[in-house]
Length: 301
Figure 1 (tube, one colour):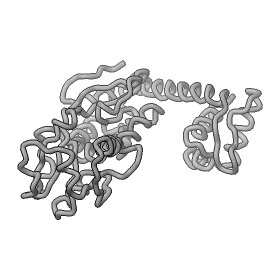
Figure 2 (cartoon, one colour; figure 1 turned 90 degrees about the vertical axis):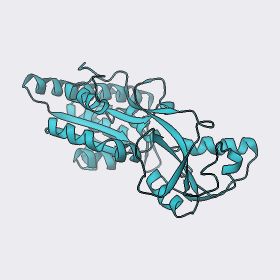
Figure 3 (cartoon, helix red, strand yellow; figure 1 turned 180 degrees about the horizontal axis):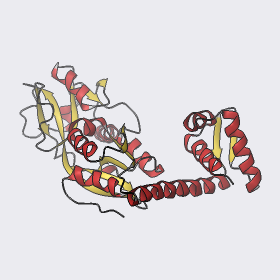
Figure 4 (tube, one colour; figure 1 turned 60 degrees about the horizontal axis):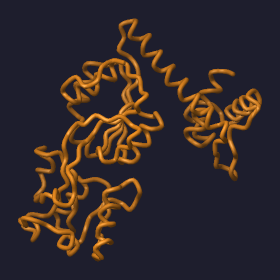
């Protein structure tokens, strides 16, 4: 078994495509296919099932070999990081994912400070939905993800970061803007701007389930994937929308909006840093979280 075979297999399994894996590993598709064929012959078992012309599915043996290859590659990465530290180098890769709003409002200064302190670390920052963040953490494709604590499954480790609350965004002077207590029936009387209809956007699913349970009719005038875009159209009076915001953070101050607390309908939540429980961290990775949190919350393990 050769090292390049393990790498090739991992990418094919992870990406679900020989074409994509060939691009990721800078090899021809035929060369990669031959490597996998040789690996299957050596192990005397089939690792992939071909479904149709393009789809692939791991066999039971393939799933076990995928876990093996994933563990081997992670240990190799950590060994490289340890050897760099022995040489006095803070060098390696740091991969982070979070939703757009978190990256836009909460990350810039931390990233400036981190890059200044660790100029040789290769950063990858991904703008992803909350569900995509969770999936990337589980697969080991990123070191840290940032999402709402309520979205984090129990098999992942989390670090509570910032408290957030759900608010209703309305134009200035809207009939609901000064209401002491807003109900779902009142909200449903106005056109709504909500996230796209997708399993990635859990807030919309929960909201629609509540409407349906109460037998409330509602009208969605626009779908928007981030709060900044929604705010533009709320301000112009197209509809009203929701946002999950960090308390006391001066968000969207440049727009003529009013924010109505929805704490009576939606429990307060927290943005959390998320990682796999089996993740081993180099010191430069722990440092990113410590800088972001403004205190020492992770140590080098």
